[in-house]
Length: 184
Image (cartoon, rainbow, N blue to C red; front, side, top):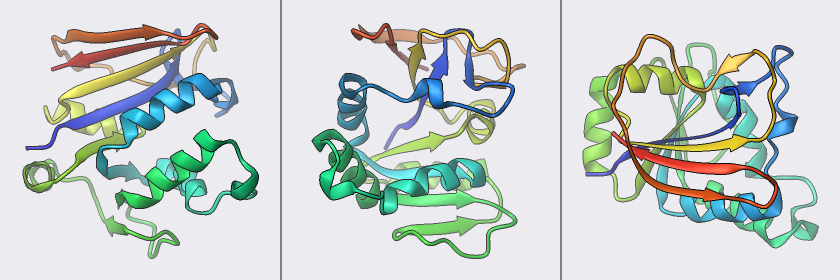
């Protein structure tokens, strides 16, 4: 059975975007990006809400990709090779390959998806992840804490959910970002 992984870049105070909706402060440096590539490589299916999908679809055809750094080219190839499921009531079609739309997140439909997956399954975006966490579906948390305080915005982890986790890996990067990997 595949594990459901929630991987997120967040400010040290726990936000994925600030009160203005900005997340430029979370852009990973080359060292972090290359590390993320290795974590993403075995993921065969990404689960996204509409907003996260609209952010990530950039990777379908990034401008200037041929001239981009190798780690950027690598990430684009990794993302393009994975299947994507977008949960949205408003999207009628998607411009990316290997992508399907589901009208709403159904935890009971994700359980067989995990059981049948040949690669890892990730959930992207804090709102969709909150639903998966509340349903007890998330097996692993990969947190990248960026050394910045933003003081408010969209939280990386949901309120009102308790989960006892085990720290299984950690790593620091030269720019001060810290990676923490927990298992449920």
